[in-house]
Image 1 (cartoon, rainbow, N blue to C red):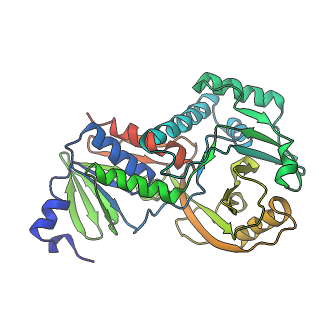
Image 2: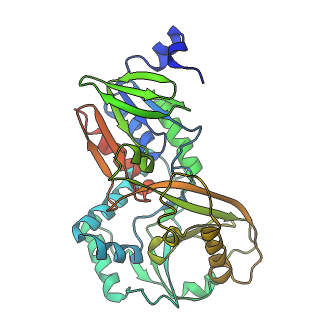
Image 3: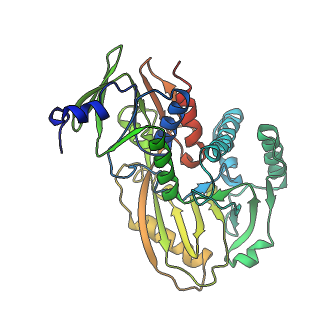
Length: 377
């Protein structure tokens, strides 16, 4: 690859000289940060560097859920985290979705507000969801962001959906689904329209904070920028080893299925499994809880253990008795930690991080970008 010291005068001047903000990562957070900085400082020179030819993390590989918390996931979170922290995170997810729709139109990103269902299987002996907990969730949601009766039990829809082995479900009318490819393309187009420079195939190895600027060690050579903002989510483990861990999520998509009986987004088992329709196809992902250690990786691979579990879920629960084939299989890398709260902070006057989205990059990414932009006086 062409090195920086081989560039022409024009190339250096246009793309690399006098950069005010360099953002690492061309995903939801990276683009949102760049857009918000240009809104706040229209004359700033903003550069995004991405190591892949598409986002390397989960931004265009996720399932496309515009969601903020299923009952089983929230119950589990409340058992393991302080209540205040859990609801701060839920509120951030909800407000993040509002910020996303402020930046982009729902039509441009394929948004469909079909609602979501949290499914409780008949053999799930660990489910502690009852009417009192649903009432608690609704009261907290009303207090946090002013919506009434978000969650409600829905048994009647199950016969229409034709699932097998599901005893009940909990419906949330405020959630929906998006096309993540359109999301990234639209964010890219908006950033470019505001004058952001976006370059691909450039990887950050390390950086040195030099008081008045930051020196970056890249795969194309060294480069200086006034400010550095790292938005690489799970890949930020190389810089924040004890605060961010990569978490691989595996996904598959079926062929088109005649008379698919459901449209919407669905969660199972505390959010560890999730599926939705894409037209008449089914997207199904998850299963990381089957092998936490093995899935703590940045390797973009799929494994028989998890793919077989997803196939079994399709056959036994989601579309029992229907013929199908798998047309697509892939994985994406999330960033997780001890809590589901993201890291949004300045480590110095010149360096900031916006990482650890906890699998909720669609919901919180735009708001994380806004908060990062607001850090610079």
